[in-house]
Amino acid sequence: MKKLLRDKKDLVILLLGILFLIKIPQGGIRFVFWVLSGVLIAAGCDILIKRFFLHQELVLKSAIISGFIVSGILDYHQPWFILLIFSLLAILSKHIIRFKGRHIFNPANVGLLAASLFGIPLTWNIGSRIYITIAVGIYIAYSIRKLPHILGFLIFFIGLFVSQGINPFSLISWFFIFIMLIEPKTSGFGKLRGFIFGSIAGIASFVIYRFSPQYDFFIGSLFVANLFNPLLERIKK
Amino acid sequence: MLNRKDALTVTVLLSISFIVLPQSYGSQMQEHGVEAESTHGEGAGICPVMHKEASKEYSYAYKGKTYYFCCPACIGEFKKNPDKYISRIKEINLEAFQFGFSPDKITVKKGDIVKLDATSRDVTHGLYIKEYGINVRLKKGETKKIEFVADKTGEFDILCSIYCGRKHHDMKAKLIVEE
Image 1 (tube, each protein chain N blue to C red):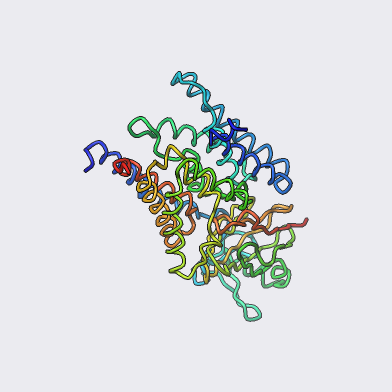
Image 2 (cartoon, rainbow over the protein chains, first blue to last red):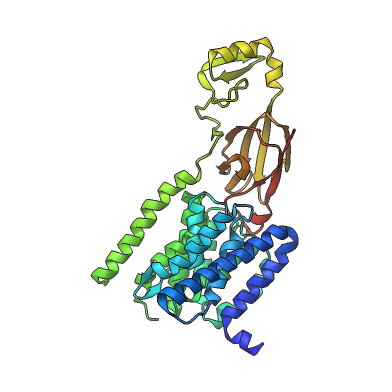
């Protein structure tokens, strides 16, 4: 248990696993195979790339998380090839789109962004239980020092939506905030940098909702915030 | 300041986002096999006789309503027995809201022409019926006309394709097409 709590990726996998299990009675057998296949595809692709192309150590936790997120958010009634394509794309993006030797885009988000561009509905099935997500999410965010990201996001998200007379809490996705927004490698560290990163995502989510509401504003906002990573890297605080 | 390499990278990434994304928005909302436009649109819908795309050139008024056809021959055919064709047109007002659709069940017969007047009560929603290739954005205060021929039997999920809040995943209705 101590070991589990030490590596927060294990905790994220555990949380995703619990969210997945809770959804099974409603999602049914197709949902089970859909999510498990997504995880297997993402992990399998990561193994192949690391083993045969990069000759790196096999650490699959990130790929498992990406697989859970992509398959848990994509509509599971879609054809299987949809899952295959976008899970592969998520992992490939991690190894292909790099800046100074590191990936700057959240891999799962890239896969989901591409899916939504092709008109595949994102049903966010895995994010259906908000209380457990918030409870575990706050602990994870605090442990990996990502609270400034969340604070920045919430201030702008809530402020801008309230200014337009829209209840932000009826739209907010806690799954997005606590699982996707604070992904360690692509959201950066530091209080100021984290706050700015979250602020960009918060503003972008409002702008996308307001001017391009057909597009998933959470996925879009994270992509926009990730775009700023090369600039934000200069902030050392 | 950014060095040249950083600036190039950021420029390329921003270009991708601003060029590719808006173009894709258009394709995302492309409907297949249906007529979908706002209430003030110019489309004539589906010909009630041949089930092909109708034209505003060929119209016929019957009991205070105007029907559009794909060709003059269809007008003649329609005139012989208008009620036979009108009975196969199902007009339904569908309202999307957080987090459901009203009505939550639409039952039609195979071969019916389904005309949905779809609106949103609160935030922006998406109306998505995978099997009929329908994916339409519903903004609050806007009415979209969606028209299709119910040519596949079965029970089909009507889903919201645009994230609309924490119970977005629960937002469902059923389209039942009976033999």
